[in-house]
Picture 1 (cartoon, rainbow, N blue to C red):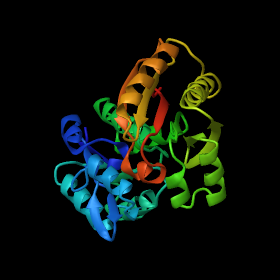
Picture 2 (cartoon, rainbow, N blue to C red):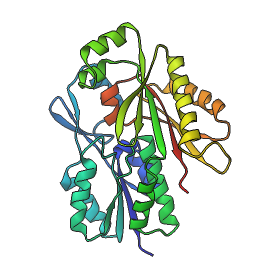
Picture 3 (tube, one colour):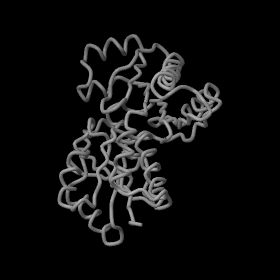
Picture 4 (cartoon, one colour):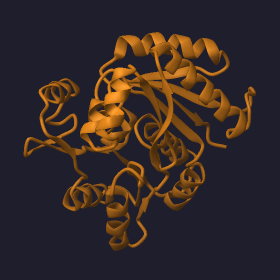
Length: 289
């Protein structure tokens, strides 16, 4: 049986210490902050990131350098026969394309999965990959299974402030001013490879209901309906908003008694820099097979 290494990036929200425990490898995402390069969780903690965000620092996300990716792969191939590499969604960053190009020089030993996941759903894909390795699947089979499953997940995010969407040019200053005036709490959706506007709420409670109903609708219409044999993974995520996220977890759990809400995680910093602190998110992934 071939020995397979699983690689993902820090957009998955998997920390370096969790990666060691889980038996996988996480590439830290680079950030340019006021012209200096930091690496998520290596030289840039969640706390430091939000501090810099609050100080209005100039923050841009970057992708791991080709050197850092190949260095990790070369190291892993000394001990493993194959690598399954799960980068963040190709629609949200170029890092997937870069990995696909680099893998061409590895004689079919590196399988880059383009399954359009990010944050909590990307973490789920990495856990699924580990389980498939245990089942004895080959690298190419794991890639195929994960890519076939790519649309079986959804993320809904309530944004607390429109400031960062405006700053990043994702909404116009006029729309931001009007939204701020009306105290809107927009709900965004990550479905497949895009971050899109989904709905506008006036209050946090209204936003929460919108997100819970959206997940219910996805389970009914897209994921095969609520039933004991149709397993779903639900999770909560947030940006610097843990207390509210724990409350939201209880509320979501009450709506889905059959499905355990399995984690409350911080959203990865590459998402946070576009939406700022104070957000709440709920995600749903259909269990493989």
